[in-house]
Amino acid sequence: MKKNALFISLSLMLAIGLASCLKDPKPTEAAKLNMPEQPYNYADLDLPQHMQAEFSANAPTVFSNIGGGIIDPGFGFFGDIISNPQVTDHGATLGRVLFYDTKLSLNNAVACATCHKQELAFADPTAGSKGFEGKVTTRNSMAIINVALNRNLFWDSRVQSAKELTLKPVQNHIEMGMEDLSVLVKKLGKTDYYPSLFNKAFGDSYITEERISDALAQFLCSMVSVDSRFDAFQAGDQAALSDLEKLGMDVFFRAETKCASCHSGSNFMADDRPGGEYGDPDFGFGGGGPKGTANNGLDLTTADAGLRNGQFRIPSLRNIALTGPYMHDGRFKTLEEVVEFYDNGIKLHPNLDKKLIGEDGEPLRLNLSNLEKKALVAFLESLTDRSLIVDEKFSNPFN
Image (cartoon, rainbow, N blue to C red; front, side, top):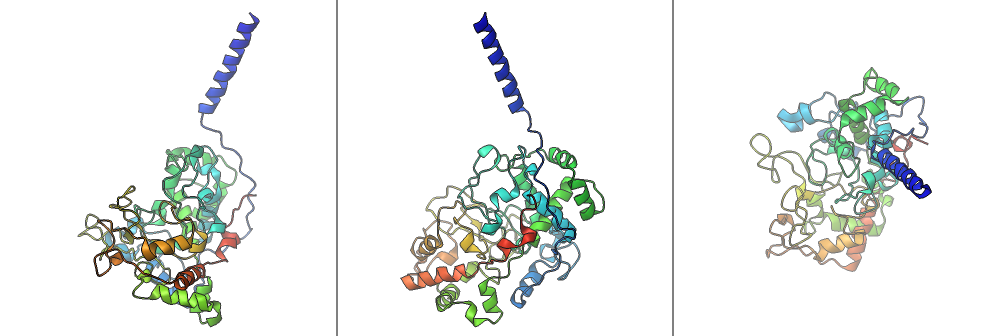
């Protein structure tokens, strides 16, 4: 009888334990918010001269001091639907809290910042990121760099604005698991800090999916990286770069290497405006859709199709020294490996980008010297913005 009673007792305890595990976890109180009385300045940009044209042309509606309105002229008919919201100080402040809050995940364990770490230019140091319930992503978490300048985001360019991007990871069953956003709205409404933050950002305390997305997008767009040693050099400080880095800059911008043909402009990114050479004929009116992607010959056969046929977004090279591992699958751990690949490792894939095909019809071979390779890496390291990774207004507000 005692054995039976013990068995029944243990079985009952196990059943209760399993039942509690199957329930949605109760929201846990986050660490105390440590917020300034006056919000940080997110809305007004202080840009070096060589970056002003880049932002004026590509993000005219986002910041109060370089434009206004809600329609991005680069998207024509679609502009009023998918353009990024205008950044405000209170809106980006709310976005900062949301970005670091684990309540955005179903089990209160993962935040946006879990896979996008400030000290790494908002990248992740692993090939795949650990998300909801320990599941691991199949692609490397991209760094968050001057998002306001991008029109196509994610490795496969499947969204066309920061606002459209923000809730995709939250709802993803691997990343944050909050597939039903109405659950998130209710959860945030039960906190003691979000009603006030939403009121300051939007004029009332009403919490909606749209407003969550809007605030997160404002915060992402406010992460502006323009303060590297390369920027100082561009502003006239010739001593900002070493002789080795200047050699690397020469290698980067040579017509033969074609580095700058993909990573162009002051943001070192592909032009991803609609239409043109790399436009998708199946997208939009009269063709001309997502640009800024390429098949770079990583493999002879494509395991991950990306946008299609092994095409992946060409990211900005700013802060690249902080954002490894590299490529969509994080296969290269160091910049030296990346340079070596582009020097002599490109595979002749059927859909290889034509910029990476030599005049002989074979994959491009740079045949750089060891010194040139070292110099190129040194130049890429000069694109690091040390102020971004310590700026308090982009840091974790919970302590």
